[in-house]
Each structure stands twice: as C-alpha cells, then as structure tokens.
Image (cartoon, rainbow, N blue to C red):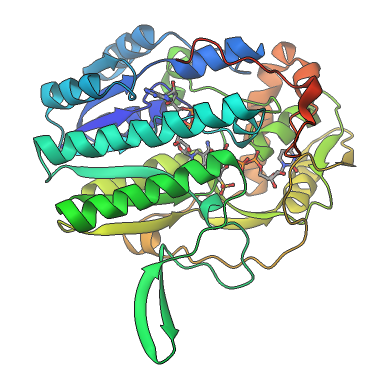
Length: 394
Ligand code: NAD
Ligand code: USQ
C-alpha cells in the first residue's frame, strides 16, 4: 500500500513510518515540524537526542534500502494538503498531525484556541482533500480514550445502542472530554463521522490510550532513528515521566489520590495497531472506531510498578492535582476489536519496565529536574508560573 503519515516526525508518527516501511508499504511522511518549535517555546528537550527529519530519512534508506517521500508543510494550509495528497496518491492516510498535549491546551486562552484550530482545521482539510481527490482513501485518524472521559458506565468501542421511550438507535458513544485538547479530538470524531455518513468516506478512528515506552524494532536499529522521549510537565506522559523521576531520585509525582485510571499501550503495540488497521480497511461509508489500548492502570498502580522495579530508593509523593479530573472513579472500557484483528499485546511487565529504566539510565545526564513539577493548572487564572507565549506555530 501507499501510506502517507501526517505528523510523521512525532513520537508516534516516526516509528510508525519505520514500521510500515519495514512491513513493505510505500511510505510518505508529512509534518510541519511544529512539535520541535513547541519544545523551543517552552524550553524543553527530548531525553533521547533526536535527529533532524532529513537525517532520519537518510539513515532509514541506509539501514533498510527503502525510500520515503517527505512533505514539509502545515495541515492548516488546505492547498498544501491537497497538493501533497495529489502528489503521493495514498491508499491510506494515517493522521497523527495534531497538538496532542492536554496541559499545553490548558496554558491559557491562546493555547486552547491554537490547539483547537490546529487540530480541527487540519483534520477538515484532510477530509476535504480525500473527498475531492479519491473517497476510496482510507483515513486512519488518531483519536483518544480521553474523549469518553470517565463515565460511570462501561465504555464501548465508539458506538452505543440506546433504547429510549420504546425506540432503539445506535449512536456515537457520549463524550465527556477532560481538556481543551481532548475536546478537539471529540470535534474531529464528529467531523469525520459526518464525512463517512455524507460523502461515503471510509475511516478508522483509533481512540488510543496513554502511550508509553521508547523502543521499537525499527527505531532501535540506529541512534539516528530514535524517536523522542518526553518527560517534562507538558508533553511527558505518565509512565515515561515516572521512569525519569525514579532515575534522578525525584519523588514520583502522583497527581492527587492516584486513582485516575486510563487505558495504556506500549509504543510497540501502538505502531502495530496502525499496520493492522491499514491492512484491514473498513467498507466505504463506514466510520469504524477501535479503542486502542491493551491494559487499564491507575496512576497509583503505575507509580507502584516503577517503584518496585527500580533498583534504588524510589519515593512516591502525592502532589496537588493540577487538573480537574476524577481521582476515584469507575472505569471499564472495551478493547477487543484490534485483538480480534491480530494484535498481540506487549504488556507493562517487570522486564519491560527494567528495559525502559535502562534507556533512561543511559541518558540520565540530560535530565533537567526543573521541567518536571506541574505548573499548568486547569483552573482559570492559575497559570501565573506557566509558560504563556505561543511562538512559531502560526
Ligand atoms: P507528537 O507531538 O510527538 O507528534 C505530532 C506531530 O504532528 C509532530 O511532529 C508535529 O510537528 C506534527 N503536527 C502538529 N500539527 C501539525 C500541523 N498543523 N501540520 C503538520 N504537522 C503537524 O505527538 P504523538 O505523541 O506522536 O501523538 C500523535 C497523535 O496520537 C496525536 O494526534 C495524539 O493526539 C494521538 N495520541 C497520542 C498519545 C500519546 O500518548 N502520545 C495517546 C493517544 C493519542
Ligand atoms: N499524571 C500524574 N502524574 C504525572 C503526570 C500525569 O498523576 O506526573 C496523571 C494525570 O493527571 C492523568 C494521567 O496521569 O490523570 C494521564 O496523564 P498523561 O499526561 O500521561 O496523559 P494525558 O494528559 O491523558 O495525555 C496523553 C497524551 C494524549 C493522549 C492521552 C490518551 O499526551 O495525546 O490523547 O494520553 S488518554 O489519556 O486516554 O486520553
């Protein structure tokens, strides 16, 4: 297949491009390099050094003998999106190209507006380009488990059958997002579902849980192929942050009571889910939703696991939760459809945790403790200490 990866320079997009190329697909990578600009805006840096995009592409050709086409530009530019799809002629478009940090979207009004415009407008441009050029293209859109929030009933895979006053219908599962970022994903889902229903597009919405890990078979082939590893308060996800905190003797920052439960997935499985979705496309007109995670864990359980496996002393500290979220709640989410299609999960076991800690150990000298404590608050007017300017993103 010809597969175009939007956001192909990011944490997930880059190893996914490698994985699909290694599986024999013709891969193109599109990105505006905004994620690297957001690091500069906030003064952060990936724990593991990352090569420039052209160097990554050259290294992959050297290692695998396979080429990748590159498109550098902004998804908010409809002409660029249209021209890139016309030039590459994809069978499948995988859309990772969004601002994906909940804390970034909650810094202030400017960052919230930027996040929603970037994500919603970019996705609309992709949907229109597909509808105009070739509605047979399969759109694989990265959504998030956080669109559902933490309802007091079981979470289904995208759709819910509701009986009301004697009548029954199948409706999109109700959404209760937890940040301005997560809300942008809800808006995307509705826009893509509309495009399938109205223009006969085919799409897979992958409601992905929190991704952890760093290594994949392909990105581990050469240091130039490494993907990013975030541990700062804005872009770092919970397990990767805890691994870094343990390594430098910083008490693990469990927000509030630590009962927040999320679906989680290893990076290795996250990129393989994309291959599985691409190789098993939905029917024309179908808006298919998969919940893309392999295990449910509470933040407290994740901290306990790291503390148990870390060979030295490791303290867990409850810090005031900067977010507005339920700290104890019911959580039971379905996630069988990707397994039915062949996903074999790599779980968060002790062997994996030790390997993650050894990656962190290798780069421990690069850790900057001052980027760890959370200063971005969900509460209005509380972000006095938070970074305030949006730069190089428009
Ligand atoms: P990332 O920030 O590392 O990568 C996103 C990439 O998209 C970046 O390289 C960025 O430069 C690019 N991008 C952003 N806006 C763009 C635009 N307007 N035009 C062109 N390129 C643009 O994020 P990630 O962790 O790789 O996440 C990828 C996707 O997966 C996101 O949509 C995110 O919401 C979703 N997701 C991520 C996780 C996770 O834990 N990382 C979990 C669930 C869902
Ligand atoms: N948390 C802590 N301590 C920390 C960091 C986080 O207790 O140091 C808690 C948060 O309060 C939250 C949970 O851990 O309850 C997850 O936070 P996170 O920062 O790891 O992940 P989140 O903000 O939910 O966002 C990440 C990705 C996002 C993706 C989402 C999937 O950045 O792109 O959409 O995971 S999901 O959580 O299913 O919505």
